[in-house]
Length: 271
Length: 271
Image 1 (tube, rainbow over the protein chains, first blue to last red):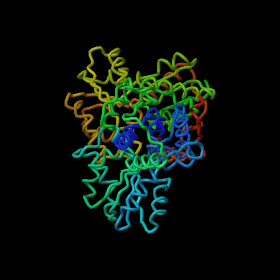
Image 2: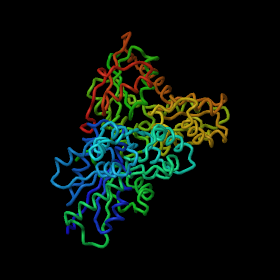
Image 3: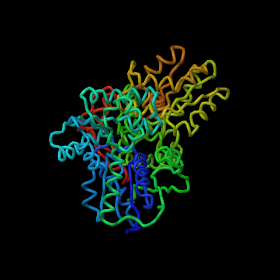
Image 4: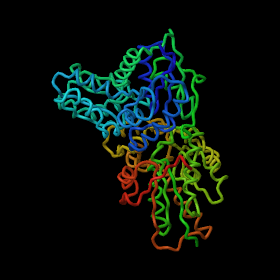
């Protein structure tokens, strides 16, 4: 048993979809969340910049007494996980390996689609891990740079011509190639699940990287006998931009209300 | 006569449309440009964060010997100009006052439309300056948070259903209200001029904030006898993310090629 908190971070709001999954699996865990809303998005930036920002995010989280750090961000998981794991004396868990494993096992025809930010796709991390698990798999990767800004502007509902056009444009090559499994490689994408499922059709299995990541966290803590004995965990949220702007959108990502008073502001450039 | 450089900055690439205008008006001036590509966009962030970032941008530019600073960014001009002007012992020129003046003079029916980022609209700066010039004018303001990410992803051409849908959605209330003048209050928007003009119709006069800003700079330098005697000025570019990603898109905004070797990288959080 371990009562200490789990530190979770993302470039902004997307990681809250992973927090929602963690809450379902592990309601007793204490969570400290950091969203780098002052510097979001990460997915269009260079690897050097992403590593620099991720190190600062972790340095801030480590001002709390943590038992594990969860990278609830596809971009940071693909681009900075190895550096962060090597530099920190505690488990650092990302969303890429669990999602790659799930996809490698789910495919029937061996053709897997992958969508993510430009930085995630450029890293090649998902492909590498999928092939480790299933060397015969063919992976078709498609960067979707507009999905994060569209989701953050509330454009994720069916019938919205803008998101439906972008989904069709980005996913057409994967659909034509006959993928039977599609990795949603960014923690913003669960909000697009309905639109994507409608476009790809029921025969395509969607793998949600954030949900797979949360499941892997639950397994790792359970294996290490590090689950919390509490019935209901405490949740604290920190952001690098204004709290008010965060609590407004956060409820959409989490599925529950976040009071502005539960959110703190951090000058992340000082870490 | 004054041979010193003009410092120009923006949250990212948009300010290059102002540099293009400056080059046409003042080809002999030396320009030092800073684009904060590691933290773009600014327009969705809080006023506090924008002021903090803008101060760092100016602190970097002032490591050069400058005769003036041009804020080639609607968001910073609306939100931080007064602070920056008070703190720096040289002219600090923005794009808002010149565009507001041009719009106030151009309108025939007294109904002016204004589009910009969320932060620009929230500041109320354009409305205040338009009414100073033309107290009877009615200003209809519309934030367009998706225009910057769409433009930076190359979605600015006529016939693109995504940008045409967003233009129609954002501008419909202004068109219906019968504005005869529309301020493009963000330096990214000149790339949307064709799509916007086609939607609004030929009777609506478009005011390009970046171009008006460039004209005001030329007038101010000329009035102060501070123009450069050179025939052809030197251009230097600095960014806070990777140079390669910048030089690729910069040519679209500038209208001429920028070699990667002409671009420097800056750790802006140290300023």
